[in-house]
Amino acid sequence: MTSVPGPDLRLSLEDVSKDYPLPGPMRLRRAFSRLRGLHLEDGLPGAISGLEADDDDEMTEEEPVDDAALLGETGLGRRVVAGVTLQAPGACAIALVGPEGAGKTVLLKLIGGIVPPSEGRVVVRGTAVPALNAMGLILPVRGDTVKSALPQLGAMVGIAPRAVRDSFDGILEMMEAPALLKSSTGLMESKRRRELILAMALSLEPDVLLLDIPIPDSEFGDRCL
Image (tube, rainbow, N blue to C red; front, side):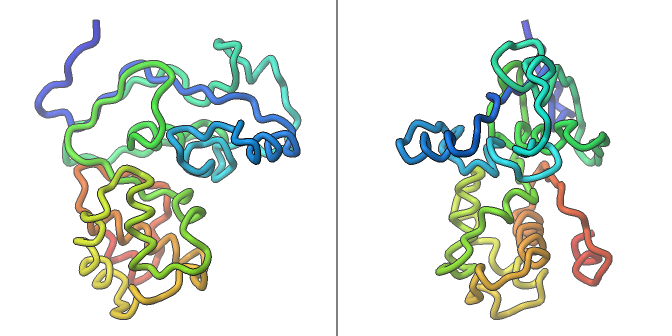
């Protein structure tokens, strides 16, 4: 029997775990992908679902693989998050601290509803908006303007396109770039992409902000704070 979070709680995690299948050789993965045999969780690109490397919580092909360690308790794959319980009231800030590969970003994806937990329960009261480095990796690289790309990106992480479009004025004000919406996402530097994602998340005024993008030491960073 699971407990119900109290009225003052904004976020509650109860014994949450997340498993991913072991990555196969890259050639096999590409072959299965072409044959539509490679399942991407919830239809999202690998960088968001966690099936491809997007940050320090993922695994590269070059790393030595200890199958026994990766199988963990499940026998099915890699346990990235194991038995996390957390409660957070409103008006607070919580930092996730740990070494590379500890599962910090994956936990943020679980809280944001981007990927489902393998075990446990996640409850968020209100809206949760992610501002993650992984989102910068899936912005269209060419042929899209910021105006068309941001609603698509929002939809991929569960944010209604209309809500993103309604936040455009706040994004432009925060970025101090009146002509930004006409800019091509393909011409943006990675730093500018991260700033754009952060500006979008803050302009949406979420109840829970999930953040792994560093706040820069700049005028833009001051506006974010």
